[in-house]
Length: 396
Image 1: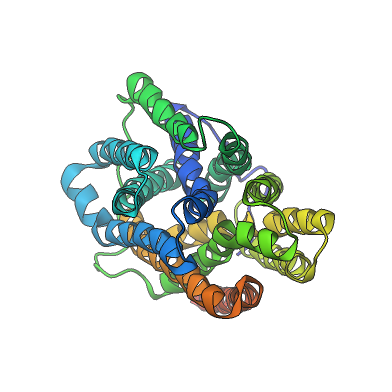
Image 2: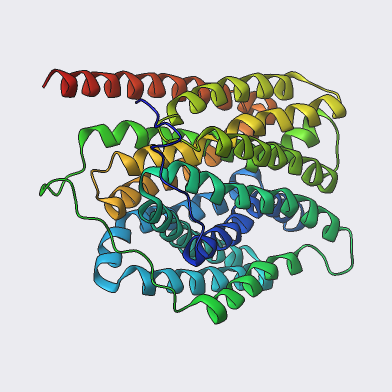
């Protein structure tokens, strides 16, 4: 797809709706990035196996799948505005359950509630940004995820630091609760954009949607593999304590933040998403191989940053491709994408948990390069299909 020239590109405006979505995405990301270190602390505190620990992420992903199966229907019935604020309330409820939970019987339901609330909240923000900014959805979603990455940089370090205090790591979970409460007081009257008119009367999504949708799932699998198992990898391969490894893991999210800042500049003009994703996959693979094979703390920390530099652009740009390929059915495209995301969140960490119990964490992480290679293959197919459609349109 040819990119627009600077004169043709519409002006990008960050209005109050955009800021509401950006800040809400950061709150959603807080719990998303907290879940990995949080499970590492639960693993130690409650003396859980890796498989039972990973069950929390699987149940979280079940909540995400439920969101994907119901988002389009619920949004059409209740409206985007009501669904958005109900999802914020569910996110708060799940966080409070985790805050109070000291037994698996409480933390597992908390993961389910948080999975539904967070995923609905993130989906609501994404469709609002995509429909508000239209052809500049790439930039809007990347900027929203820049804020999410900024939050993610702080979260592992904050949890690691608080874990060494008398209060423990749990009070950190209350920060997004307060943030969402302030947003409700100040911005609850802002109307979310109505879904655009579909490009066709057909109820099914276009065939070209499913490639980018699969790419989103792979991007999430690549990211969550490290979010959930970065701490155990550093603990086993480098010998860091769980608290220290949680702090070092923040470098991965710092790399994501840096990558998304670069990506936001590269996508100021539409049409560059595929090229940025391809380059990002190469960077992610190079960084991970050094991390995976390295045994030195400094080298591993640097490799985490480089891996994050590549991984950071994969999800937001893949999501922008998927929503753009939805033929105007943004809510339906988002719903199907969230099913794929939920499956990825549940499958990748659980598979790693089972493999880690059997062959160890380091060998189990063979899953990561396999996901990156598969994503590169899917991207190639998406680009090839896009060129074929463009050639057919030009011939017609």
